[in-house]
Amino acid sequence: MACVGSKTRSAEDSPNQFFGGYLTMYEDKTLVCKDCGQEFIFSAGEQEFYAEKGFQNEPTRCKACRQARKANRPAAGAPRVMYDAICAECGKATQIPFEPKEDRPVYCSECFAARRGM
Image (tube, rainbow, N blue to C red):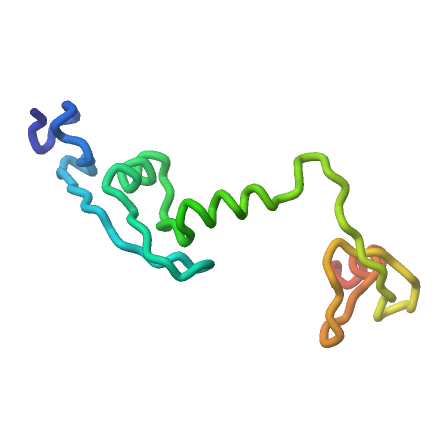
């Protein structure tokens, strides 16, 4: 058993955490997934893990949506999708790594670098 102000912990203490000599208790939280809208439990053990790793934000997606999002990411080293565009500054044809939008100007790398140095 741990004492307040002590750094000693036992299995019974979990999911508790010591911060600045004070014992912090975690309780399961119900959160809502921002992708599917379903409720999911952010367990006391997960909260303790997040605190140990220094994570400051709670998860915003349920486990299924996190796994689906991870599975849909391009593999490491996979070629990037590039889009054709016309530079708004010099009119030169260029390629960019995002889909251009009509309401925002796009610049070639030379014009972008020049504008950045302004």
